[in-house]
Length: 131
Image 1 (cartoon, helix red, strand yellow):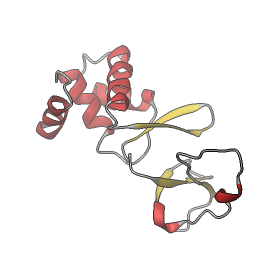
Image 2 (cartoon, rainbow, N blue to C red):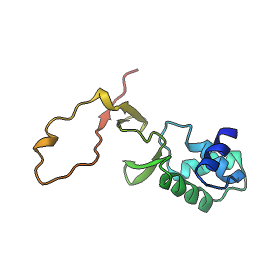
Image 3 (spheres, rainbow, N blue to C red):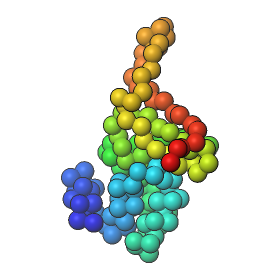
Image 4 (cartoon, one colour):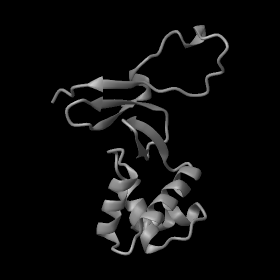
Protein backbone atom coordinates (compact mmCIF):
# COMPACT_ATOMS: atom_id res chain seq x y z
CA UNK A 1 0.00 0.00 0.00
CA UNK A 2 2.77 2.42 0.93
CA UNK A 3 4.58 1.64 -2.35
CA UNK A 4 1.38 2.34 -4.29
CA UNK A 5 0.96 5.71 -2.57
CA UNK A 6 4.55 6.66 -3.43
CA UNK A 7 4.12 5.49 -7.01
CA UNK A 8 1.00 7.60 -7.48
CA UNK A 9 2.76 10.63 -6.00
CA UNK A 10 5.79 10.15 -8.24
CA UNK A 11 3.48 10.16 -11.25
CA UNK A 12 1.72 13.33 -10.13
CA UNK A 13 -1.50 11.49 -9.26
CA UNK A 14 -3.21 12.39 -5.98
CA UNK A 15 -3.37 9.17 -3.93
CA UNK A 16 -6.83 8.44 -2.58
CA UNK A 17 -7.92 5.21 -0.88
CA UNK A 18 -9.84 4.31 -4.04
CA UNK A 19 -6.90 4.89 -6.38
CA UNK A 20 -4.55 3.00 -4.05
CA UNK A 21 -6.99 0.07 -4.10
CA UNK A 22 -6.94 0.08 -7.90
CA UNK A 23 -3.15 0.26 -8.05
CA UNK A 24 -2.82 -2.54 -5.50
CA UNK A 25 -5.27 -4.62 -7.54
CA UNK A 26 -3.43 -4.38 -10.84
CA UNK A 27 0.20 -3.30 -10.70
CA UNK A 28 1.40 -6.26 -8.65
CA UNK A 29 -0.55 -8.85 -10.63
CA UNK A 30 0.60 -10.80 -13.67
CA UNK A 31 -2.79 -12.29 -14.54
CA UNK A 32 -3.72 -9.58 -17.10
CA UNK A 33 -7.06 -8.67 -15.49
CA UNK A 34 -9.94 -6.86 -17.16
CA UNK A 35 -11.35 -3.63 -15.76
CA UNK A 36 -14.26 -5.58 -14.26
CA UNK A 37 -11.88 -7.97 -12.50
CA UNK A 38 -9.87 -5.03 -11.18
CA UNK A 39 -13.09 -3.37 -10.00
CA UNK A 40 -14.06 -6.52 -8.05
CA UNK A 41 -10.60 -6.76 -6.46
CA UNK A 42 -10.49 -3.05 -5.61
CA UNK A 43 -13.95 -3.24 -3.98
CA UNK A 44 -12.60 -5.84 -1.59
CA UNK A 45 -9.85 -3.43 -0.57
CA UNK A 46 -11.97 -0.27 -0.55
CA UNK A 47 -15.77 -0.60 -0.47
CA UNK A 48 -16.27 2.98 -1.68
CA UNK A 49 -14.46 2.58 -5.00
CA UNK A 50 -16.72 3.17 -8.00
CA UNK A 51 -16.52 1.69 -11.47
CA UNK A 52 -15.84 5.20 -12.84
CA UNK A 53 -12.89 5.63 -10.47
CA UNK A 54 -11.48 2.28 -11.58
CA UNK A 55 -11.74 3.19 -15.27
CA UNK A 56 -10.34 6.70 -14.72
CA UNK A 57 -7.45 5.39 -12.62
CA UNK A 58 -6.64 2.67 -15.15
CA UNK A 59 -6.61 5.26 -17.93
CA UNK A 60 -4.26 7.46 -15.88
CA UNK A 61 -1.94 4.51 -15.26
CA UNK A 62 -1.88 3.76 -19.00
CA UNK A 63 -1.25 7.44 -19.76
CA UNK A 64 1.67 7.43 -17.29
CA UNK A 65 3.06 4.25 -18.96
CA UNK A 66 2.62 2.13 -15.84
CA UNK A 67 0.18 -0.21 -17.60
CA UNK A 68 -0.46 -1.34 -21.14
CA UNK A 69 -3.80 -2.27 -22.56
CA UNK A 70 -4.00 -5.46 -24.59
CA UNK A 71 -6.80 -7.21 -26.40
CA UNK A 72 -5.79 -10.79 -25.73
CA UNK A 73 -9.16 -12.25 -24.81
CA UNK A 74 -11.97 -12.10 -27.34
CA UNK A 75 -13.48 -8.64 -27.18
CA UNK A 76 -12.00 -7.85 -23.77
CA UNK A 77 -9.33 -5.31 -22.95
CA UNK A 78 -6.93 -6.54 -20.29
CA UNK A 79 -4.35 -4.56 -18.37
CA UNK A 80 -0.71 -5.58 -18.33
CA UNK A 81 1.65 -4.14 -15.72
CA UNK A 82 4.63 -5.49 -17.66
CA UNK A 83 5.36 -2.52 -19.92
CA UNK A 84 8.61 -4.00 -21.24
CA UNK A 85 8.63 -5.79 -24.59
CA UNK A 86 7.38 -9.33 -24.23
CA UNK A 87 5.10 -11.90 -25.85
CA UNK A 88 2.07 -13.78 -24.52
CA UNK A 89 0.88 -17.36 -24.19
CA UNK A 90 -2.85 -17.94 -23.78
CA UNK A 91 -3.94 -21.26 -22.32
CA UNK A 92 -6.89 -22.62 -24.31
CA UNK A 93 -8.29 -24.53 -21.32
CA UNK A 94 -8.03 -21.95 -18.55
CA UNK A 95 -7.80 -18.67 -20.45
CA UNK A 96 -4.73 -17.77 -18.41
CA UNK A 97 -2.43 -15.24 -20.05
CA UNK A 98 1.25 -15.79 -19.35
CA UNK A 99 4.11 -13.47 -20.23
CA UNK A 100 6.84 -14.89 -22.45
CA UNK A 101 10.18 -13.10 -22.17
CA UNK A 102 11.08 -11.16 -25.32
CA UNK A 103 14.29 -13.11 -25.94
CA UNK A 104 12.56 -16.53 -25.83
CA UNK A 105 11.01 -16.07 -29.31
CA UNK A 106 12.53 -14.87 -32.54
CA UNK A 107 10.45 -13.41 -35.35
CA UNK A 108 12.06 -13.73 -38.76
CA UNK A 109 11.04 -12.00 -41.95
CA UNK A 110 9.89 -8.66 -40.57
CA UNK A 111 12.60 -6.99 -42.64
CA UNK A 112 10.84 -8.37 -45.74
CA UNK A 113 7.69 -6.37 -45.04
CA UNK A 114 8.10 -3.54 -47.53
CA UNK A 115 6.12 -0.38 -47.04
CA UNK A 116 5.77 -0.74 -43.26
CA UNK A 117 7.55 1.20 -40.55
CA UNK A 118 7.31 -1.28 -37.66
CA UNK A 119 7.58 0.33 -34.21
CA UNK A 120 6.49 -2.63 -32.10
CA UNK A 121 5.21 -6.18 -32.37
CA UNK A 122 4.38 -9.11 -30.16
CA UNK A 123 3.71 -12.77 -30.67
CA UNK A 124 0.60 -14.32 -29.15
CA UNK A 125 0.89 -18.08 -28.74
CA UNK A 126 -2.18 -20.17 -27.92
CA UNK A 127 -2.33 -23.73 -26.74
CA UNK A 128 -2.32 -25.95 -23.68
CA UNK A 129 0.11 -25.27 -20.88
CA UNK A 130 2.08 -28.32 -19.78
CA UNK A 131 2.29 -28.64 -16.03
